[in-house]
Amino acid sequence: MSQAPLLADTPHRQERVLVIYTGGTIGMQPQANGLSPAGHFSERLDKALSQRSLQDQSLLPAYDVMSYSPLIDSSAATPLTWQQLASDIAERFDQYRGFVVIHGTDTLSWTAASLAYQLQGLDRPVVLTGAMAPLETPNGDGLGNVYGALRFSAHPQLQEVAVYFADRLLRGVRAIKQHSEASDAFTSPSYPPLGERVGDDFILFPSRGLVYQQRGAPRFERLDYQPVARGEVVRIALWPGMAAWQLDAWLGHPNVKGALLQLWGAGNLPDDPDLLAVIAKASGEGKLIAAISQCPQGRVKMGAYAAGNGLVDAGVLSGDDMTPEAVYTKLVHLIAQPLSPEDRRERFMMPLVGER
Image (cartoon, rainbow, N blue to C red; front, side, top):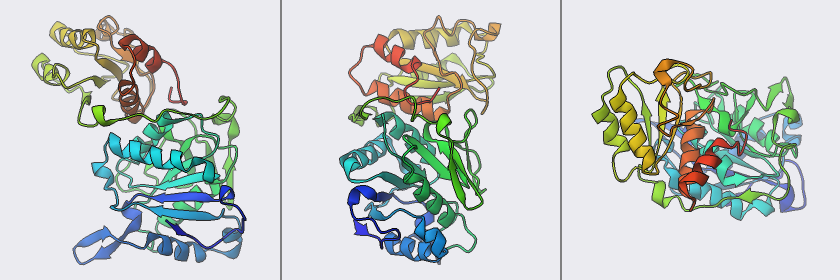
């Protein structure tokens, strides 16, 4: 771990922020064969931030940089990646006032959601960010995203996992990646931003955060995700013409312990009793099955239409307006715990970190 220059002079480590660099486009540099991972990120970040105005620099918290080796290809991240990152934060939690996680954008929102469940009851910020272009790209988004993440990471009233991207601070467990190329790649379809940049100011909206909802010391749930890290939880989106034997290939597999179903509209399933039978059989075997809509906005209301009747009786839990990331990582988190099927179902329906 390297120590950055004191951009804002503070005497104690507890007054500093830890930047955890895991990889991603932001740290890459152009090579003959295209963008490739590059080293010396701490020095490059220091240099980039030093190019901002003295006023901007004076408003930054002091920070240390911890770089992963090897770097993580976010498209290859697994639940074990999420577990390792949560452990790294938890083990250093009392040493820093806040944390910035620099992460590849492909699965950044998945990592943010998982961290929210593992680091429940936070009393300080954990802000994830990344970029759609390398840090040194002229007029790129990387430097602005890291600068904003650092500013919010020192805000004492931000007490949850968040994503900072393109001038907006989003609840981590509500964020999704909406665009493969645009600089404003992330959005929060069912919850307003926790904060935003307005001109030179970084404004937090505490009433939208968890700061007034949480009580007591942090309640970290540091679990072993190994039993759910090799496909034991599956994600299945309906398509026209799906057959029961295809659904059974997933839900009926002996290794599968849980599933996210993405239904039509407000929670509709084809009028096929064989499909419902497959779902009911899996649920009856203790597999944790939850459903949301394939629509990026809106909630499921299973049973509102005849086409959705039977899902509740089949044991499917409503994910309401949760994101796919929030549902999937919550299933992973609950199945990793030594809970009864009934307790898992009850906890899934409870809002734990503002995910529903």
